[in-house]
Length: 219
Figure 1 (tube, rainbow, N blue to C red):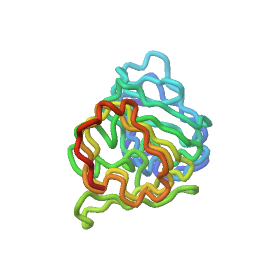
Figure 2 (figure 1 turned 30 degrees about the vertical axis):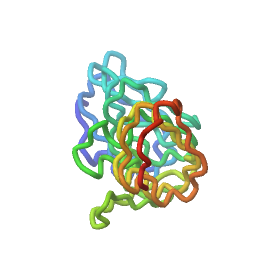
Figure 3 (figure 1 turned 135 degrees about the horizontal axis):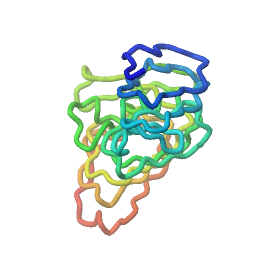
Figure 4 (figure 1 turned 60 degrees about the horizontal axis):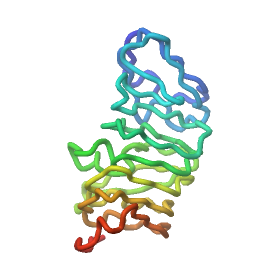
């Protein structure tokens, strides 16, 4: 096959391994692809595929600038998204119930999101409920624009490695996060970025001297 439609695997459960052929040119992965499929553990990719690449059981585009899919039942508890990544697919980390720590180069879909919903941390986890998830209602300054995302309760530590900005409301409602690491290159944090982060106990800054003289951030 060369293409998969947007609903090819809609609400499929019990699939442990997804075998993608060398001929595949387009793969639609979204919140309903394997929603709540806690058995989804492995991706394989046919040798010679010219569109996609597979690195440590995580699906990327060929030049590894877009992270497309991370299997929900991947057994690792910590994952670092490479600095080469420029965008992360919607729901790429949906139902990742083993994940305790994640390092992201930026928050949301990409460094400069096209719209508000793409600027939220929950964007990469998706809008479908699954077991061992909690609901985070995220919005910037206008509650009418709220989007409900479902994040794994296991995720307690987040490190942002290369972002200059964090949007308003970016982590709103992320109540299970205990530890947050911020990069020295960060220059702007939007209003209420960490509002309702009830579990947050630690904020780490790699280079505190880089922050000296900056105004305090409202949240």
